[in-house]
Amino acid sequence: MERFQYLNKRLNMMYKKINNLLPLFALIMFSCNPMSDCCMSGPCVHEFREPVLIIESAEDAENQPIDAVILSDITFNGNEISLQYLMTLMTENIQVEDDRATCTIPCGFGIEDGTYAFTAWSTDTEPKDFNVEATYGSGTGGCPSFSDDGTRLSLSF
Image (cartoon, rainbow, N blue to C red; front, side, top):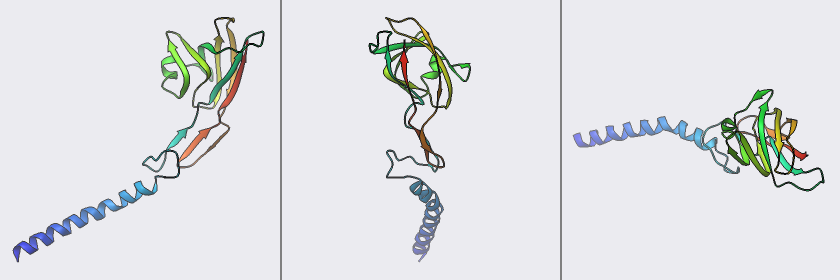
């Protein structure tokens, strides 16, 4: 009889622990959208689906396409962005060496809407300053949320 009471007491303790964890389990399960591209736990995530500024093409003075440009002196809303910091944000097709970034076109960078300015050039062109207001064209707010359809830019030298 004692053994039965001991087992009954242990089972009751186990049920209480499981019941305490059920709300947490339900929160995790219902905050995950299996229809999305990724399934993350937690009720509120924001996904940047592409950079806010995308350099789609570049051409020289003779309208010949340029495959890669070098970027330097990048600023966001008037504040200098270090290339090391830039690489911690979303980037596509950008390699950093010393004080410049090589953009293999198409390339992109940034995750915040605002004014981006930079100097760009290629091996066959002179440096030229560019200033662009970059914004996401689509997205949703709330939880979860996303930003997509960054500003497209064509560089002409």
